[in-house]
Image 1 (cartoon, helix red, strand yellow):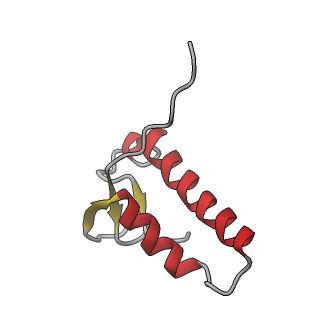
Image 2 (image 1 turned 180 degrees about the vertical axis):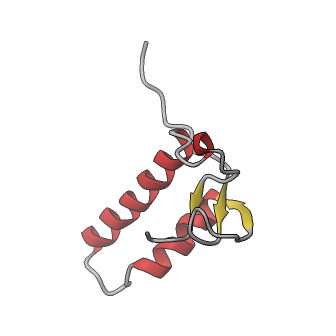
Length: 85
């Protein structure tokens, strides 16, 4: 069985706080989520390879949270938080 392209979700549900905090959940397009995180965490003056590596790390971390259902198996109704903790 051959490996196909990864399936990227259309949307991701983000909890606007720490996992246990009382905060709103928002569902946004996955690409918009990546753009917002990248623009908050990296600087356009960084070398291209650093930009690519950081965007790759942001993407794989988000996909891990979605596909491992990290928060959902704990009973939370979201895929990821906006908390860095």
